[in-house]
Length: 436
Image 1: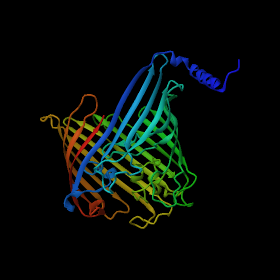
Image 2: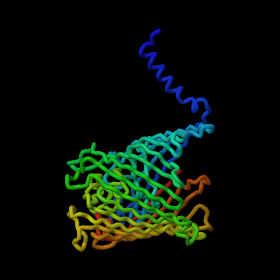
Image 3: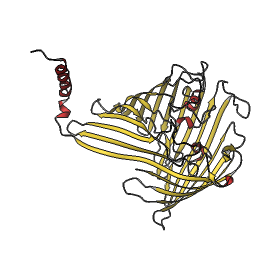
Image 4: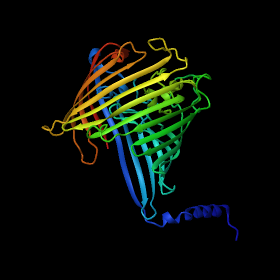
């Protein structure tokens, strides 16, 4: 008997399903998880009659307490199926967040009325398919591990759309391999071709307290012109000492990053994302589009060194961070350093002391001090923040916080009338901050 085309198609589908009976025959357990992050606050400027403050300084180099005037939220969902007998697992991940690339709801300042929603992650993970590790594919946050929570900034962020394997066992280490593509979803550059995506190949190895990773990058055209780089390489090596630099209870990290071409300047440690467009370290940094990130040439070289961590000392917690970055530019930028050289460097130092107030339940006194200077700034910038904070430990990890904040800021990144100035300012406000 001859089979119709529809029958043959259905039979083919049936054969495909039947080809994985080992999983289908087992009874799977299913779990649903809901995670997220949200912050919301209102900040006003004393030097501007307590009007809404714009970005008063770059939190990535001064610390975020008292400067994080923008609201932000993310809602993450995961559906998980586990087959215990075969050690297989499937996880479908999705994340909603503010639609920052399209800017809906932004008023040019730090928005306090919310923004439209966008899908910022949608990917799937398979365990038990590869010999070891997790096979994944889709649009996702990736490589966002080199994180300093006082700045809320990732110094490695390779997010995009791609495919890869994580935690594959090779030798005595755990290895990651990935291909990631990203494009410029937001740019004011008239020459931009938004289909000119950035291709990136990533490899990472973890051996005990050491992490080594490398990234190779390529794009067909640079939106800024033929004289700019279309390829680049970069590397990162990090070490996590025992406790707080082996000096006491806590945690710590030391990292060294370097890159060339598209691995230098604002591209060091980064792919194209809207958040990365606001990163420090770019000699051509404009702060409003991703096209500026690629204003580097093939011979440009960057080096970034950082050390950060947390010290737990009885009723006190201390979270310090220091960093230095240098870029040797190949003479393509109009901005020059203060000595006339075509290079750029900046450094920062910050600390967040927290007194846990054991005599008062659910209340702490947090403070934060930051100092930064760069080769093109006439003066350094510094800030000091005090933040009385109410917090409740849920016992499951999350501890939502309500803060009152007062910040003094002085220097080249201070704010007056919405524009950077050397004038000082006092910023006051309130903020909630929570993850779950």
